[in-house]
Amino acid sequence: MVIISDLHIHSRFSRATSKDITLENLEKWARVKGLDLLGTGDFSHPVWIKELKDSLKEDGTGILRTKSGYPFMLTNEISLMYSQDGKGRRVHLLILAPGFEVVDQITEYLKSRGRVDYDGRPIFSISCVDFVEVMRSISPDIEVIPAHAWTPYFGVFGSKTGFDSIEEAFKDKSHLIHAIETGMSSDPAMNWRLSKLDKYALVSFSDSHSFWPWRLGREATAFNLKQFTYREILKSIRDKTIAFTIETSPNYGIYHYDGHRICNFSCSPKEAKKMRNICPVCGKILTIGVEHRIEDLADREEGFRPKTGSDFMTLLPLSEIIALAMKSPLESKRVMDKYLEMTKNHSEIDILINLPAEEIRKTAEDRIVYLIMLNRKGKIKVKPGYDGVYGKPVIEEQTKLF
Image 1: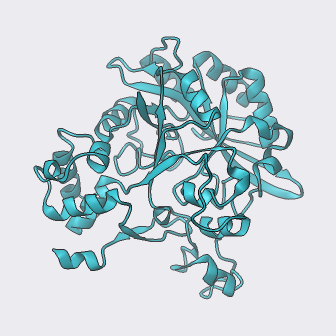
Image 2: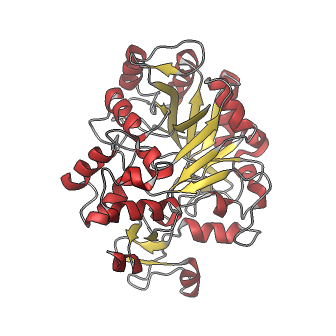
Image 3: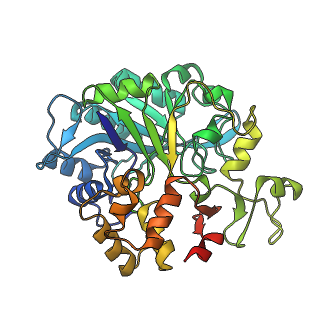
């Protein structure tokens, strides 16, 4: 069975998240989206974990279910801030855990190092090395994955405080890292340019801070499982046998290009290097984006694909497609009404990937259908995002067709 999952999300107890995030809303919109499995996010937060324990039932598989049967996996993102090799480091890690008993032990350890009640993604002065060592001492079934590995501020390879390799970050515990989350500003093809990443599975999740369908599941990882269990998913990650990932265009990510948000300036890595990475508006150092960082570390040309590289598809969320076609804001009532009409009988992912054009036309105008077909081929152009600004889908010559 193929299970499409989004294992990196947040509760309403993380900073800068929707205050309406509940398990009910997550389940409702995950079903509309077409996701088969969600991470819980934020299991270390005392209020959220109580809600999880009250609402989710364990059955020994490591997959927890709501009363209506929707599956969740226990997950948490944490922020590590510490010094190593004479440099301040800031790294976000995603944790997967097999059950409440293990989660309780993780949380007790975290509480011994600081507070867990102020943020669903708590901050600790713990090194990557020490953190992974402690997690493995708690349970060999805990998986630690560097989150959004390339983002400038909190990615393990980030331009601001990151490392140049997994080995540099995790040292003698690097063999316990089996996957990295590519993040929205990169995709597998970009990561394939680094031969030292060939041994890691490349996973993609949304890092959603709300339950809305243009955020939840915008990136996802599909597993081909014999049994729907935590252990099977863990095995798929550790053995690098994931089925495929769903990616947004890397240009859509908020840190793809170099730039300064406050100066309304962005540029390609090539242009930035010509300017010695100095912003022409304010004269300060640019925020170096993901494409630039990968270019600096790559030892392969663009287009290289390793033999073990997993499949992926590039898709923008359906809400973005509708907004583009209607020339309306993404979060507008017009876009949401059309989205709900289109997803009444089919999930968003089914519409984006599988549904024939003639079936889509039953609820959508030709312009939307055309863009869905274009999206299916990964051919909608996106103006690159930079320094916290989302990339913007654009239509150029396609507008002449309507």
